[in-house]
Figure (tube, rainbow, N blue to C red):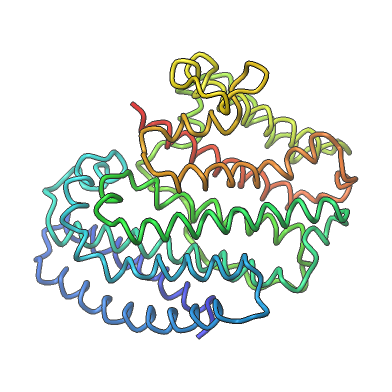
Length: 377
């Protein structure tokens, strides 16, 4: 079975679990919910078995790139979380009752074992579905030169390739560590496992847009990658730290639909300034100086970007996460910085659709950083 078909079937679990969770608020008997869980567990077990076999075959091939191998290994680790759900549910239960994202889901009724398992399985289905969709897209890229659709130079192709290699390597390390430390992960916010697959998906979408000709693309997967409705939006979070930041986000969207021939640079400038302002507000020079005095965290008296990201992740003591965040930021900014500075001669080749996906990519990254920062309170 192809990855695209498997991720669609696993994505269907999200809708089924959502329905089951809603049914609990309507006083449906626990036995009905347990029946849903049992039936879906059997189907998922079959899907995961098929998936693991395919992923193992891919990771053993000699002619695959290290990127695809890393994603296959990561998705194997994620799929194993389905088998671990019963074992870690007891640890997850107390944590989910305290975390904002889960508390909003269950605020109107008492947490039960059935609800805990539904919530965990829904979460696992979501991240695996997204991760498989990303792997499918990145495997498709192997037949093209990265940046082919924007006539990227050889040096810029190397930059894109190196970024993809690094983000896939740290992504694999992150989920391998998660699979090996279930009890520790139970104490973390859902953002730790939920947002890396979302950002990887948007990275694969950006690379697809600037690489694969439109007539040679796969059909767009029907994925729900929106955030839980009760969560605060990016605009809400920006308003919370500085209301003026919202104008930069609006500026990027307005530049996108303008007729200005230099709109690509305007979009990139707004996104770059927004990113810089956000990071310097939530990880200011004073904050970093009070937090660390290590020389490697400073360059010419100012905190390095790496130091700021480590500071944002400081409450989640998990080195693999901060490594992924660093790689994630670097990959996201590769294209933004190139557009902003006008290097590589790519500006004139960007379509509105490509710029829109780039904005989506940066919005996802900013949400990730702001939600990680919220864990520090």
